[in-house]
Length: 116
Image (cartoon, rainbow, N blue to C red):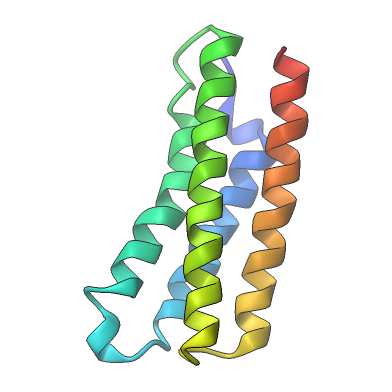
């Protein structure tokens, strides 16, 4: 069993969610049920998939959920790039989140390699 609250990768995922929620508050109101909603789901999926394994004992399963979390990272990355192209928010704010996503992905890959 993995102690989720001790995992730096989970904390980084939670930071991304918090930053994303602050970012999308600035998006146009008409995007509330479009891109904004999809971005929130993608962001929440990142730490949620990391914690999905918390009650299990298998490193293989944990690695699987880390991989799913990485997929959500790529999904959110694409959505952030799109929102940048559409001019929905400050480029620096978007780039900060993109940088955190890249850091989390690296952390995930290191952890997955340790679990092998």
